[in-house]
Image 1 (cartoon, one colour):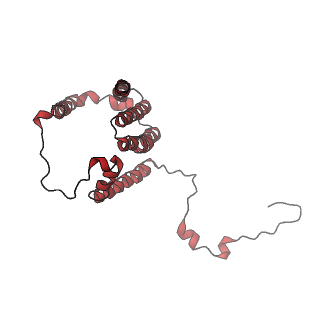
Image 2 (cartoon, rainbow, N blue to C red; image 1 turned 30 degrees about the vertical axis):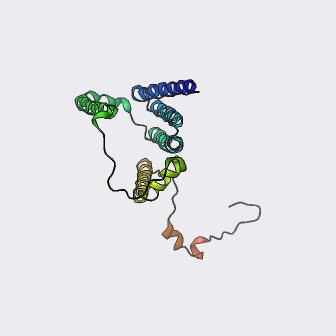
Image 3 (cartoon, rainbow, N blue to C red; image 1 turned 135 degrees about the vertical axis):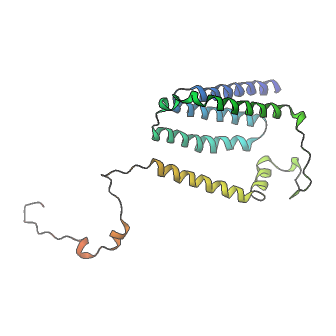
Length: 205
């Protein structure tokens, strides 16, 4: 059983790393988003192997089902000329190299955990229940909807504002589109709403 779990771990890890590299090196932005979705699915498989089913479902439902699909729609609707944007990419290579070195240093510090050993918190807002009595989803729900409820609501508000901004930015007005005018509809009366025409027998309007 352990060998089978290790086999699936290496399969999901290989798919995740390969698709993540294809997100960066793919020429088409649409293909990059599709590879990003594959990366999320592989990461969800890794979370399932470690017993974190809540994070796996979160990746599938939220990131794959909403965020990645939204990225795909935005990329297809904006129709950005990425070839024109990539022409000046070499001008930002030094800044990108510095940021890459900083991220690499952070990863090295995170992997070598001997240098960073934080102690337990002195003040605890609420007691932590025993691990064998609650599931992962129940424990996260207790923390998320009690201690971090305001931050959770604020995150939802930020996502709502981002959605409205994306709609406003991609909205294109057309002269042929017939739009609704609420004041004009409210101000209508029977004289302007009804037009009576006398049509002779056997003839149309």
